[in-house]
Image (cartoon, rainbow, N blue to C red; front, side, top):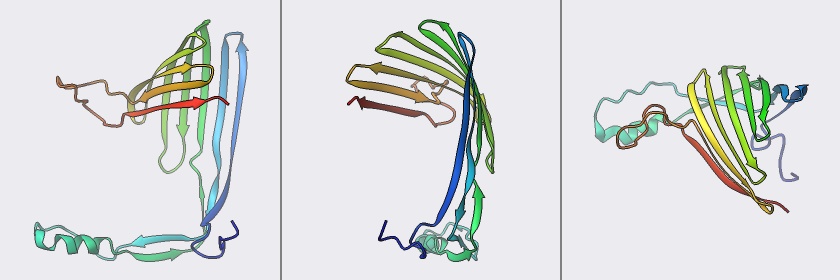
Length: 195
């Protein structure tokens, strides 16, 4: 940190603060309710520099000039602006978890994000843990971005934890098993080693 000049554009370009608040309440022996409000705060940007193009580019089909025209498209004129404070997009969550059986819990989560790009979602999940070493979960959601569903598997060995999960799994496929619709499948896997 000694090498950073905080008064130059190459230094830290802003600072901010945010607060997360949450509560979990046991309503009944098998029912928990939760609420959270996250990212309450913002960032004060010190060096707020934008780029702007002064002319418009239209491709006319002439491939000889394409490289020069694309280079000109990337020529931006820097436009410096004053310090600017921006609020973070705050997120509100309401949840419920019900222990249906000793190895099965059911969950419901409502999420609403505020800001320039507001969105909301309601997600239901079923979590199955028949043994201490094995856990599985499936979830389905609907909201601003449509319907999606996901699944996860967790193997908890005493010295390590292996997990695999997928979200936004496609529901429609061609006869060749090519997914139809949105191509935003997310998958994650990993290993945690206990020390």
